[in-house]
Length: 126
Image (tube, rainbow, N blue to C red):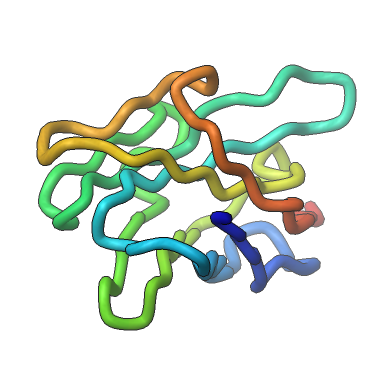
């Protein structure tokens, strides 16, 4: 059974940085495409970033391009989201997602992911 555990959220001032981590256990990490989604209060969950199995192919939402970087360590079974130049509108609960996938580009749609973490809160103050 796949389990995902996020960490790294917190309160930060606008312009600051945070790094989120998500550790996968229970299956072979290298077989999974990984992604981050987020959900702000009163809004639907939205795609943030995704990374393919071998870490080569990445996709980003337009709203975070140039500020966020997704990466993975297939030895540590962990995916990361480095968030720089944070803005108040980045405030949300951030969710890690995983799905067994081929070597192509990872999915970016919420419905494509079966396994989800519990979420970690990121709050950016102005």
